[in-house]
Image 1 (cartoon, rainbow, N blue to C red):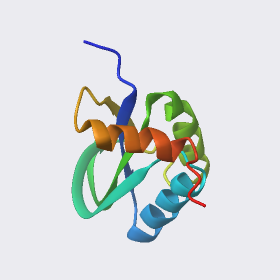
Image 2: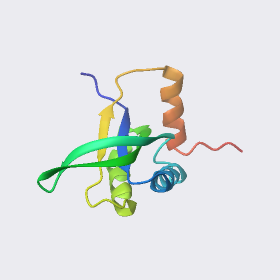
Image 3: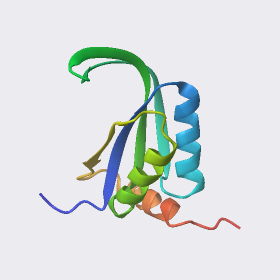
Length: 112
C-alpha cells in the first residue's frame, strides 16, 4: 500500500447542532477542506457491557493525513461524548484536481 497524503475521517455526533459546530471549527481552523454531514444515522454499538443504540449525525471530513492528530485533539476537546468515534481511512486515489484542492484549502489558501 502506498503512503496516503490524504485521509477521510468519520466522526459521529449526538445531534445535528453538534455536527454543525464541529464542522465549522474544523473548517475555520483549516483542519479540513470539506465536511459532509449525514443526518439520521442509526448506530448500534457496545457501550458499558451492553448493546446500545442512538440516532446520530455522521461527519465525513476530508483533510491531509498530516493533520490527523490535530483533528483528533480538537474534536475531543469540543465533542459531547466521553469517547467519540474518530476514525481515519487513507485515501488511496481519486480525482487529482480534488485531492490538490484539499491540500490547498487546508494549507490556508488566500483568495484575495
